[in-house]
Length: 398
Image (cartoon, rainbow, N blue to C red; front, side):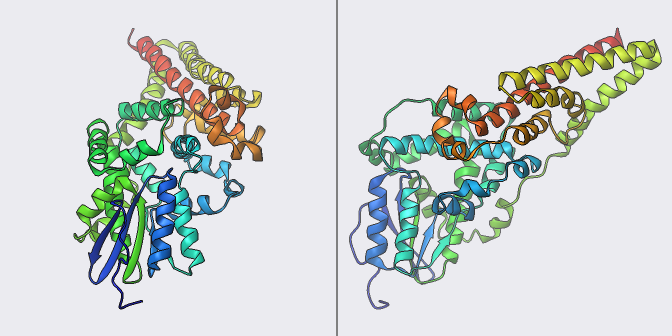
């Protein structure tokens, strides 16, 4: 239909018309848990029959939406080896919160994106996945956030799981208004500017450039309403040169690397110095104190998580060693043992979103218990590092 005007119909204010180098794009701003958004994207795609449908999805999220048994390809052991357990946990926390809100409205999170994909497929319309890899987004957000802001972010995510506030379609419609969204983005930028930059601003640029790269002259793009303002702002700018920068994981700073190794060297050096000054008996006593100061809190963390007995023993043995190297933490060692000894079963992968919303669920679900093991044993080891280090240095200078 090259001779027909695009768009062909009048649509609500959630649909925005953009143009770029001969291309016309209908940009649909949606709420990821709204039935109204589901209906809208189906209507626009079916009516307009565009050359391509662009989605705010990456390959991972697209697969998770379209393949119901995505848990079958989840290799927990490899995730732990790659030190991606914290990334997986944050991803599940956000997905669980969306699922809870969607459950109140009988709409699954991302239903409008799935509806857009299904409608495009049914009409033989190509699909372009235009979002940045979610793993890169989460890792960039985590690395760009200070230690204290990390705690605030995690606390906020955990608190959101137990928030019983009801939400209605009317409230969603209000939230989708541009002025309210701008206010929410400004609030996020004030409280967590680095997180907002990574989660929103960088992805606005990425989405905008990938939409412009999509094949065809008549496009429909489906994105969360929170991205509409940013995409419209940068759409006429050439930001392609920024893509390489915003798709890389920031390296650990030299200062943090130095600090990471300085603490172990300080502890080891202090024990050696004690041996030279006060004798091997004192050095042995301080080494034993280090082992107990690290091992006991980490083992207690494992017990609090109801970990497998071998996991608790492993945490006790690993903590004194892992505390002397920044390469791996006791939490990862304990989590790996827990997965090997008490692996999650199929049902627990399927119910993890619901189980996250209850305190009991965190201990009942074996997948969530792996996270508890990771957090509690790691926290215990951190306490032991500071307690043991303080005692050893005090003995050296006294």
